[in-house]
Length: 155
Image (cartoon, rainbow, N blue to C red; front, top):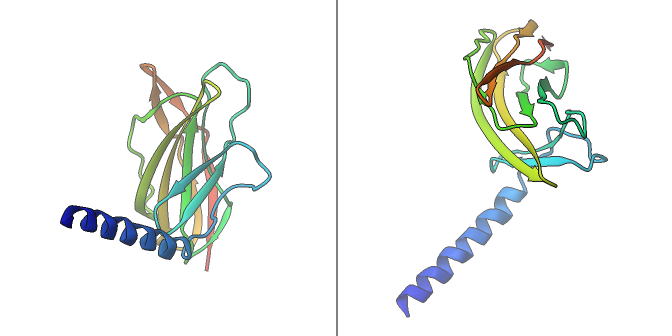
């Protein structure tokens, strides 16, 4: 009897927490018209991603991108690294103008196709232009590089 009551209370509290967190969520990325979306949920923000990889490509694809090119100093910058295979960030990269925050990863398999993502949150430390270097990732024992990205931080 006591165990059943504890389980009921735990489920009840879990449902309440979901309701409370859902009121704080905001959509930070993506285009709602896209069909291929991934959802990252860290209880504060919901990140809806639309893949930027070319469809129906069998060769390995790796991309890095941000959802905007211009950010305010108070904004959170989300760097997305995605591939159509499972990957590992091979070499650490340094962005001294940014303060690194949470990193999230996700793997999706849809219609026998793999899409893997890593999201890295940053906060700008200063105003100016920021060059995001080519990011090296390892897939199936080989090293692949993303293209460079540029963003601008304004006051």
